[in-house]
Image 1 (tube, rainbow, N blue to C red):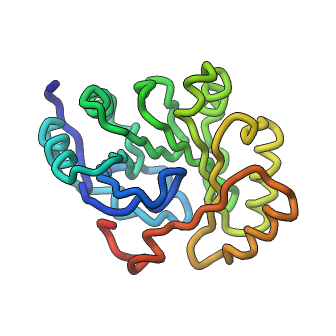
Image 2: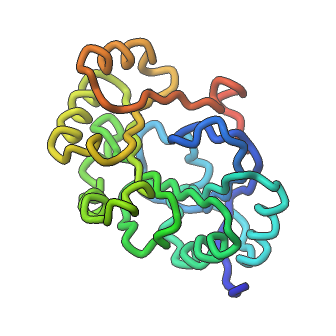
Image 3: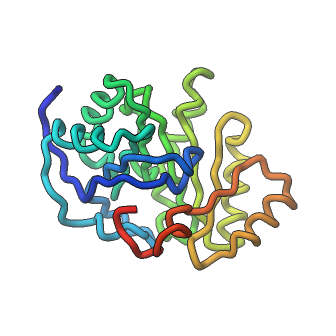
Length: 223
């Protein structure tokens, strides 16, 4: 294995709560640091602190859970260049690797074997203007066999966010080629309301709930 270090907030075993992999047991590797200041961020504790660990140690810890899926998340994991070595080594070990990124930084350098979950921030996040359009363009330019390694996620707080989201989907025709997950900001938008809008508009996207927040206390860490 290649040496190197990463600043890690936590490594834990839980149920995947979001994305098209929702419901699967998953080993989570949460990297520290972000700095984008999204309104309503539910992992603000990952902004600072953390523990510096060797990549080899991170891999051993994650593999110890024997989970069918390993997700690398944050914070914003792509802020730490060594994350690319971590992802590559996990893929070389024939692990199913997910990357959940806030969508601010380009995913162009991510190993092609990694399944990329790209968050598209709506207006209510306060950072909508920081979405990186390069990620959408990269996904659209990918060979058909590689498009399955991209999916997009939107977490919405109200009708204005929904209108923004549907406009974006129409502009890029994302649902023609990619899985698009739409969820709600927990406790802010009623999932039934989002479901009604999606059904009314015959939207070819998937509604998601943050399963971990319904299984455990929404404020609980490490789940």
